[in-house]
Image 1 (cartoon, rainbow, N blue to C red):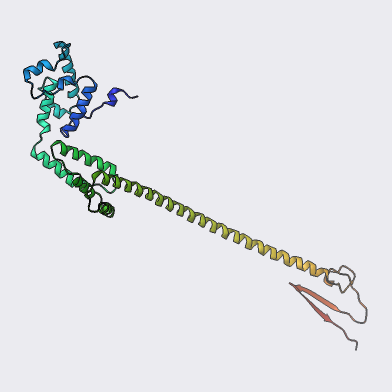
Image 2: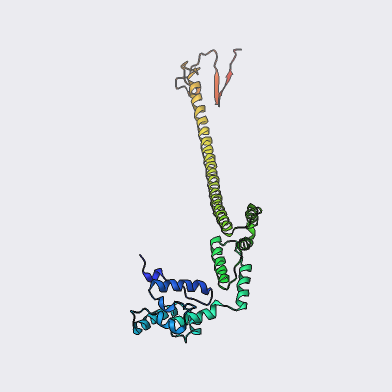
Length: 306
């Protein structure tokens, strides 16, 4: 668990939103048992009577002075330098809280105008989350409440709808129309805006994921096309080699069916024959054979006796 110092840390009061700061300060003093010196005097009790009544009967004056000094210290440490400078002459916790109330609980008319103007002119940025904008909106609203300027709930709902970015115009119109003739409810409007923001964020992630998937599919498709072209070229070269091999095989098969004119044996041409050339004396035949691809060309010359 965290320490009490961390748990009950109070933001220093800088002169704005006094009511909210005072509420936190009172809670802190009650938790630390330092609240008695700041308890407000009842209206039906005189100042003299209150000096006696506010101190417990079993507490000495010295003990009361220590208690009051501790409360005074706690309050001073929760003030900014500028605010502390304005009330540096106060020596008791009760006098200090009274001086702060007189200075900041009843602000000037100029401060009221400033807060109203800030609320009306507040705009949510396009890239800003609604939660961030709502925090600022509530802070300004609390400041207005502290100076007794309280807007109706329907007015607050209308103001926050008007503060949404231009990209939300259609959504805000739909939210307003959903109430029909009923009054706008501030908390309902806030819930609807937050729900829509979550939906838009999820749809944006899905769209981004779809784009990445599409890019991945296109990349894989390009790779497949490259591989197919490579395999096609490889198959083309393989087919060419196969055709050459087939032609050679066909020639070998055709050669087996050839009969040599010189020796009468099968499987070779007469030009390739190693046997002795025959000469019958009556006629001589000069044979020339030439192999041109799949054709066998023969020339026969005969000598006629005269």
